[in-house]
Every structure is written in C-alpha cells, then in structure tokens.
Length: 303
Image (cartoon, rainbow, N blue to C red; front, side, top):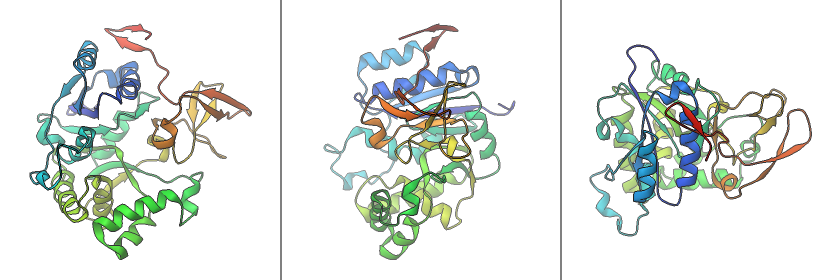
C-alpha cells in the first residue's frame, strides 16, 4: 500500500454461509499484505459462536441497517437478512467511516495471491470504481443470446429500467459487483445509492445492486477501471483449471493465467468436489474453496 492508503476490506455473511466466509478469511489472512488490512464482516445473521471465532482471528463483525430509508416498502420480517449484503454496498464509507479506500469482496470469493488488494486499490486511484467485467473468451454464455444467465440478467434489468433499456444492458458484459474497490471520496457512493434506490422502488425487489451499478457505468455517470477476468473469476461461468506445477487455479483456454480471485458462485458452490481440468492434461478432483490453513498471530494453524 502507498503511505496515504488506509483501506478497509468489507464482506458479509449469515450463519449458513459461514463455511464459505471462513474460506475467504483464511485466504485473506494467509498473505502478509492483506493480513495487514483491516477487515469487517457485515453481520447478516451470524451466531454468537461464529462472531467470537471471527474476533479470535482479528476480524470484526458489525450489525448494520438496510441502508435505504424507504425499506418499509418491503416486508422486512420476511426479507432474508443476507440481503443486507446487497443494500449495504453503496454505504460503506458511511457505515465504516475513517478509511481512505473501501474494497468489497463477497464471502464466496477468496484470493490466490498477495497482490489482489493493491491492484484493486491502485486502479481505484484512476477511476470512480475498480471492477471486473464478466468477460473471458471461455465464458460460453457470452456467445448465446438466449442463455439462462443472460435471461436472468435481462429480467432484472428490465424490471429496473424497462424492456428496451433492459434488453440493451443484458447484451453487454456484466461488471460483477461481488468484488470492487473505490476511494472514500469517489462519486460511486452517492451515485450508486441514488440509482439503486430508484431501481429498487421501480422493480420492487432488493437485488438491484449490480444492475444499477452497470447502468451507471454504461451511461458514463461513473468511470470504471476494468481489471482482467482473473481478478474475479466467476466459477459458475466457467470452471477454472488446475496447474499441477504451480499448485494454483488458472484460467482455462489457450492462454492460462493464474486466477487472482476465485468467485465460487451459484452452481459451482452447490457441490463440494469438482472434476477440474489440468493445464498439463487430465483432470483432478478438488474443492473450489480456499485450501490455505488459518493464520493466527503469525503461526499457521490448520483447521
């Protein structure tokens, strides 16, 4: 980090997602540079035991509100608490003041190198938000206009912005809101909170965070520093490959690169073991979650 950087990494989880959150935190604490960055977990329904476990490794948990003042239009008693992880994102500097930069990482992500945070934070110096488009030559759904993933995007976009605008946005690469970074003074926060609030009131559902952020970027109301797909590898779009020689996950295809951030979403998260193609040929059975032992007080202790 540069001397004037005082960043915060934020994620969030409920009780059922804790194993996945723990995978993320193990990777964060494994690498020295990210170990030195403050991290807070949005408490979306954690148990007391789980919060104590976080505290034992130096990670804070925080109970937060829904962010938006109009949330009474929804039935909050029935709204899952984990949805706070969506509505909290445009309010990070307000919820956790005092930091120069904020980096959000979904709990179902984890890092494979020490350079992830610095890369995002440095990129955020030159734009309103540093983020990764879901754009790689092996993502097959990009070549199929009627793919289920595109249909899902289209439904959310059209619910937020109408049929015509929604159709256009659904055909463009999605900037994935599961991993991003921005300066505390970035216009991202005010623009996003306003746009997401408007989208939520029109659509009448909560998960408008990614749609509203993409709307702002594509309408040039926010500038984006775009990073390669390996900095937020969406495993449900394409399973990674494994490099036997290096002992890391890599992107598939003709030009494999080390994956910096694994994002184990959707169907990829629904099973524990996967048959993974190897860069050197053949397959190997592996979990897609972090293999790193937990680091506590500079002593590595395996779970």
